[in-house]
Image 1 (tube, rainbow, N blue to C red):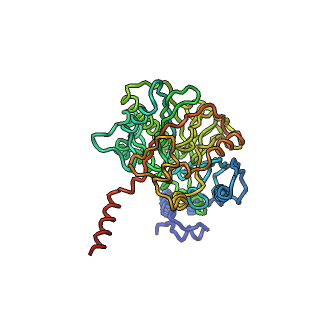
Image 2 (tube, rainbow, N blue to C red; image 1 turned 60 degrees about the vertical axis):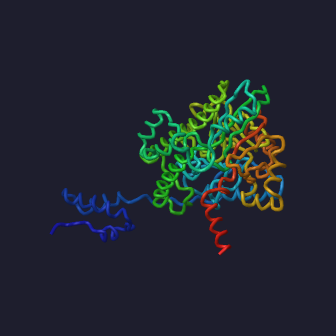
Image 3 (cartoon, rainbow, N blue to C red; image 1 turned 90 degrees about the vertical axis):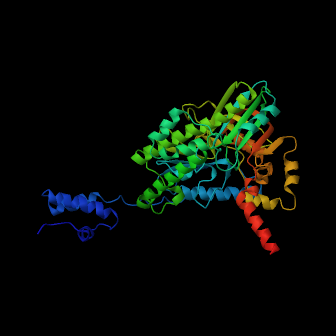
Length: 469
């Protein structure tokens, strides 16, 4: 009778039963078929076992750099929530350090990286750059162009709201970029949405902002948006890969902090996909700026850009995740300049800063003003006043527009942290040097596009019909 190794043999040898048994039994019985001993077969099977689960780190065992001050009770509650979440996140086995920026605010359940959070890790955590991969800022300077003309021009060529551009109004990324999509298994099926969403800015806090440089008076366009549907879909794939790793290597790790190990096939492919999405997002900014210049028959004298939702690999081999945090270290990318952009709110200047690579900031600076309250909380706090009243008061002196035609009060200045406080804290903690400002003329945001969404109108119509029956 031919000897075989069974699952019971592996259990009797002290191995923990699992899906990996199937692979182990194939390998073990191959040893027997080649004339190997039962003992050799068992050892080959044992080699197929997954590594032991990695335990969570002890709470508070890693350095957490707090670059944030609370100036009132609301901010104190916000800071405490952010701190608790980062301490829980930093129990993740491969995380090495963390930092909180002055604009930090919670962004999910406890243990989720906050907006304004920085995490250094041995692995790549899709949840730490979020679905809005490579959310970023870009500026172009338009000498000799009036701010009003520039704002009208960008309004005519950009696209806010859900979805992408309709057929006949779409733009195609470069052939070289499309070849990179085709070459990456995680991006190959995203070419259609890469076309559909090219030249769009989405919703939420994304904007097109027009102002004048404090230093020269020249007019400038600043845009803010991320990678749209291509990035969101890559994020979903990355989270699925990371979850598979988490279940095997560290089941105790929170799902939102799951990671993809570096220098593996999956890690290399995801890292490459992130770089392609970064290039697409940069091209998306530049397309909107170029379309605006073409509309005006104007020339651009200067431009640069930077991301603030991304992950960077530094010379120490570790991955630096910035969730709403701006890189402030030298040569953070091949196309980096020594300047980056920090917006505050639509009625305040966009800061042009030079990073300081502060050790206590893990090489990052803030990305904006952040929030002390959720959108829902902010709306409740405005109860008793109409949206029109709130809009008129908070946008006095600027040309503020909502692409959908409906005001979104959760994006007005009062929804954000105090701009003067942000400036003070940037200087207090030495996170960046403010070298210039874009003084506000006006801006465009998506607005409350859901107010007139077809599904909402249909629901309201049905409700009205039911009342008359």
